[in-house]
Amino acid sequence: MNFTEISGKRQLAFMQDFDYIREAGTEAEQRAAERIAEEIRSFGLTPETEEFTIDTYEIEEAGFAVTGPYQKEYTVSGYAGCGSTPEEGVEAPFLYAENGDDISLSYAAGKIVMVNAPVRAEMYKKLEQAGAVGFLSISGTPIDSGEDLKPVSCTLRKVDQPTIQGVCIHCTDAAEIVEEGASRARLTVRQKKVARTSRNVRVRIEGTDRAEEILTLTAHFDSVPAGPGAYDNMAGGAIIMELCRYFSAHRPRRTLEFIWFGAEEKGLKGSLAYVEAHREELKRHRFNMNVDLAGQLVGGNVMGVTGDASICQMLSWLAHEAGMGVSFRNNIWGSDSNTFAWNGIPAMTLNRDGFGMHTRHDTLALISPWSLERSARLLGYVAEHLSEAEVFPFVQKISEEMMKDLDEYFKE
Ligand SMILES: [Zn+2]
Image (tube, rainbow, N blue to C red):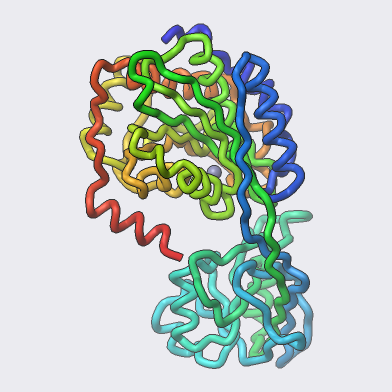
């Protein structure tokens, strides 16, 4: 690979056109998809946009009030995806159960229960089993001020039939509630399910003499509603765009497909829609190279490989050849690479640690052309070697153990 053709500055310039919140299913996401397609056309390829439907939740009302021994309303955000309380809300005794350990939760029956971290499926089930009638989770830090005192928006996933509702509260209010000895509270959440359209943008560079075999380079371009997702993950989108441009001028032996996924932040919905729409062709796929979280200067690159351990060793060799630092994890990974692995295709996510994911601080201000350039060179080096190999070197199998972890991950 000719590293001098890879430009971090060009990637940053491209990212400048995405400096806004791109929540899946919104017009902003659509606008971003159109800009991606336009960029692909600018170097002579023809992109395709593939739409799919996602279920989203509109929170109509979220309230939390302490009703005894004092009375006060607090600002909260409602948990999407956990249904609605009766219109008048749920009133019950209040309990602070810290991290939701078994001892604390043994007092939870019939109560509205506050726990520290965002409530996910596992904690949700514990709360249900403990007999809680509603929950609060705590967000933010004690040094927040201004806008940051707003509780974050939360979504409950992977729970089929939610029976209790919840809200999120800022830790400053949470501390007051406990210190003031709140013993009763009322919680209200009203929401409705709305179907919306999200989309993936894809483009294929047909291989020469190994065209039957497909390698994918992927990144999600949607963001969470809290911030414009520069690090998570328009930087990933810029890296694969740079490589798409490179390979459009240096035709590979194997077919390279570049995909910008929508709705990753809604539970990998874009990649799931992709494998559904292209199921027939999946047997031709050899490896997925996904990028999620990239572009900040202070950090280090990790390749999270979901596939045989020998893949880590081969990728490590390529990274040694390229001379760029990266460490390896051989595990499932909470991004679109999981979708490929779950469908039997070895996969990896290139990931860089950084600051401010899923917050309003995740902006272009922290994106570094130096970092974008290095990551694109590293990934491009790997992609080029894999696309040129005489025989594709990776074991085409996901171990039973990983498959079990993936089943667990995707279980709804
Ligand atoms: Zn992401």
